[in-house]
Length: 80
Image 1 (tube, one colour):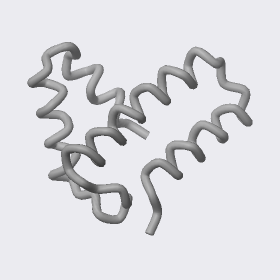
Image 2: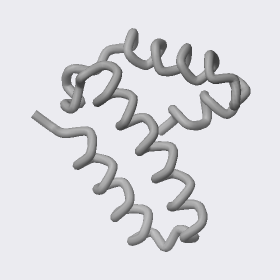
Image 3: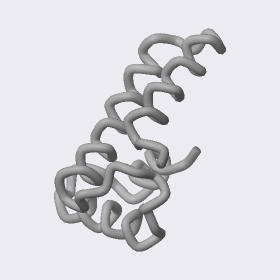
Image 4: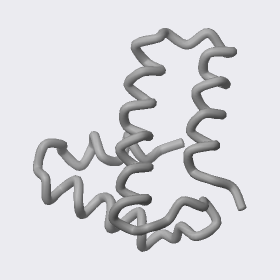
């Protein structure tokens, strides 16, 4: 099983290898850690293989409920 946190660290390493600006990488990491926290603490999921589209919809619903982000920002956060 592939852990979500392992993929996040792999993403960070890839971005650094590609020479992305630190500020961009930091923003991505902030958003990804927010997603990881939600999957772990709210959904009790740590393995990528367990995630479904329903879980993504629940995350979107949670971000909307909090109300600090517009839908466009939420969609940008979830894109690859």
